[in-house]
Length: 633
Image (cartoon, rainbow, N blue to C red; front, side, top):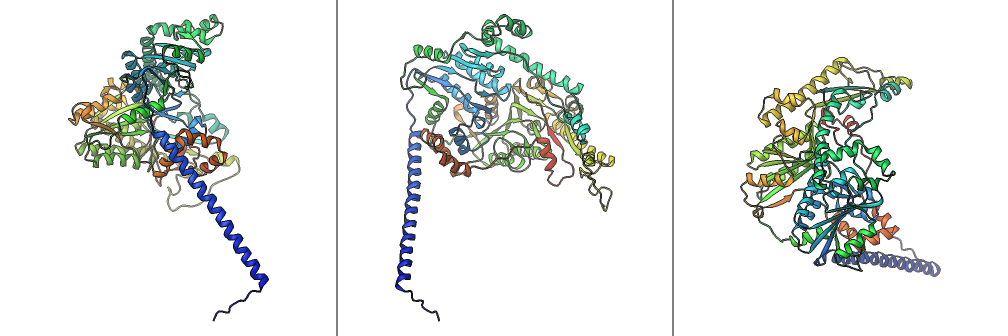
């Protein structure tokens, strides 16, 4: 039986007062919570309403193409992360997709309301010459259509200049710079530091004298084979670059090469003025400040006092919204050419966009195979390779697509080497830009040993095992030569698998493939000469080929759809809000909002070096073979 406790009048008064205060506190907090919730909702709805209300494009508009960030095949982060990074002014996190840049340029070519283009590429971070040539080709098509392109930059890098050169008029700031210097590939070599200074012995197992990816760990300088192979493909890409620039600027490759050879004398004659030197070399048409260029475009176009630059214009992002709004359809029942992007390093399991996972990329290809609306697939590859097993997982899915009766065409981007070639080789047709970097058909394994390092610190490893090979792969114990033979046998088998699969896919003898393999890197043009690539061409050519193989008819009879991992609702919600003007301004100015939202963003640790990561993550395998190429520019 419960005993009823009776309170005195004083106690009852204070208890009642406490209850009133507690109720008032909860009421005020609830008002604050719901008030903040309603405010955020109102801001979001207003932002979305403004963001989705695409203003009609007026006639005689200048399209301002000023991409910032890294040029990529596929975004490496979700919409919320990108929008928040932009709102907070994080320039290092900005990215522009190659496909978006090209489709905006191509759309402007046929858009009657776009009168001209202002091109600013000095904030664009190029990824390679193949992708830059695709953008340059789109700009050349735009110029050929009769649309005027005016390029302006403050300090133009060599790769950026490939795009700027496509303009009718090229201007740089009088205090700016522009200089051609050539292609170079230099790496640091760690043998002395690792072995002599730190006592770390690195054991390299490989097949292919040109497979130089891990040479920095065992040598003090590049091997003769590495220099020979690198210079061969780099010279091919460089001569093509000079030819592209010469064509756009109505010069000759010899003139451009002469200007580089006499660089010290030429710059000295220009008084050390790099902008003046670029003008003398006919690389630019004039020296103007940003204000002078904007005044020029205002005079040629339509003045607009409300515009930041003084003339009627639309930004790249604004124009892409226009293009998307025009093509927005509730349902499109046309047959599809699906595009799966394989960009980044090839690693095991599930990986986010911007990298390739054996499981995640295979799942995208399997989705294309299971979708009855998908009639053909283009696999867009931009990868230096990675692990053997995940590469094989993806190759099997390509083979399964073909077995299901769906043609697969590979379009190589800047880099499709080693594992990047492994996942490409079984396609019905392989397309590459002449300046693509590919090949590197070779395999290696890397085992560091820190016995001497521990000795220096007075630390020693000892113990027992039930067999001579128990604990044999422990890097704190000396590497048994017999274990080295085991590892080399695994590497030899991996190379035989690689060359054998290439031979079967390319319908050539293994001996013929071995002669052009050995880990050697080729340009796209050189790879075609050796039968590793079928056709020279860009992404669009690959799409047309895939559609033709599936007998889909003319381009308007089918649609191109990218198959990518869908974003969850919350990142989409946050991205829409942060990407709007109102949301961006609120986030940028509110330190409270910044701190609050940063806590909701996933934490990203610094990426480990690929080889170090592979050594530390063998997934239980004593030996992990790699098909990787350190061959980017």
